[in-house]
Amino acid sequence: MKSVAIIGAGISGLYLANLFKGNKNYKVTIYEKKDSVEINEGYGIQLSVNSVKLLNQIGFNSLTDEEKFHPKKIDFYDLKNSKKICDLEISKFNLENCKYTALKRSKLLQFLVDGLGNEIIKYNYSINQIEYGKNTTNLTFDNGDKKTCDYLIISDGVFSKGKSLISANNSNAIYNNSIAIRGNISKENLQKISDENVSLFLGSDFHYVVYPLDKEENLNFIGILKYKLNPNEQKNHKLFGENNFIENIKNKLSQKIPLRIFEKIQNIKLFPVFVSKNFFKPPNNTFLVGDAFFAFSPSFAQGASQSIEGAHELYESILNNNNFFNIRSKRIKMINRRSNFNQFAFHLSNPIMTFLRNILMKYLVKNKNFLENYLGKIYKN
Ligand SMILES: Cc1cc2nc3c(=O)[nH]c(=O)nc-3n(C[C@H](O)[C@H](O)[C@H](O)COP(=O)(O)OP(=O)(O)OC[C@H]3O[C@@H](n4cnc5c(N)ncnc54)[C@H](O)[C@@H]3O)c2cc1C
Image (cartoon, rainbow, N blue to C red; front, side, top):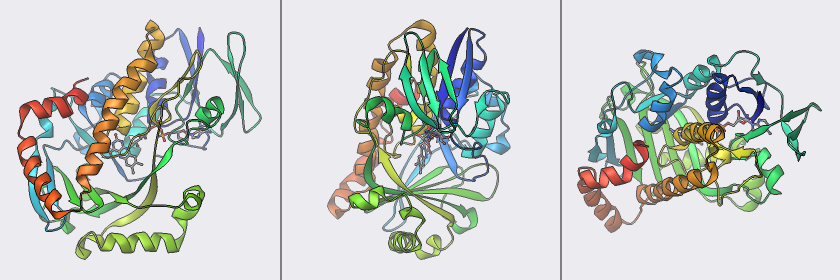
């Protein structure tokens, strides 16, 4: 039996462990630095059909319709005048029992944790050192414990400590000049939008998305604001908890979003958006997956879906000895280009450019060839 050590109990690590758990040729353990998986928060996540299909293989379709939401369309609005630009029928890509899904991130994590027994996740294990022996990999954790494994899978997120240990800090993520704002807002405060759809508001250097998470009244709010941080601010891990900074961002937001809406957003949390600048190929029998493999801007809502897809690909590669790194980097490059393009188009400021963008969007969202090429290539993996 081969031993598999996974660093980090995020979406990718948990999904991968669920796959290995069903295979008696492998013994899988997750080492997680925190003392639990965060399953209390109410923020949302979107999953496109490519990842829902893979989640269904481990029983995701057993979640009830009360616990999730399947949007029919994405409605695009111009934030300047709140007028609808066009809509894109996202449900076109749905299959029987496999639909574009939005749900609480905590629900997804709880589902993934429930699939593993108590023994598989070891909490309070933060990776500190990775050394390569003749046939095995030796791990040392902050708590002093040492472990060995046949396969090492690093899935500790965008600020991957595991990756910095083996790449000599050569592959660290960079600040994407944008801040993510997460929150919740009640349906009654957004009367104009359809609660059957995802609503995407495009503004100058800013866009936000709202969507239901389940059958409850609360909608998920996620905004991306272009915002420069100087190098010292980028290194200051306490900045996003400082009142002055939070108030400054809220003030900026209140100029972008109509006040009647802005004032109703609850549980606002701010995050700096960091993205990968390059790929790093680890030594034999060590693999990166999820945001540790590559993190892109959240403008295509593919981070979690790609974490799941990558974990599935990695599982198949270990079983069949395929070239995981080449296959994954090719696909990630394609998605990264689209994410960057989306962010650019969503944040246009120049009135002539936004006018032209809106005309083009009206045409493209109804154009079959474009949809198949731009979305189909990702959703129909
Ligand atoms: C604001 C925002 C909104 C998003 N919305 C969406 C969306 O709607 N749809 C979508 O598909 N994606 C979305 N994403 C992206 C998505 O959340 C991520 O891509 C995804 O969670 C990455 O999963 P992961 O398993 O790679 O890492 P993570 O989920 O970050 O998990 C990493 C885990 O590793 C642990 N860890 C860290 N360091 C160590 C260490 N040294 N030792 C041991 N363990 C460690 C952490 O505690 C954590 O549990 C969003 C991202 C952001 C920032």
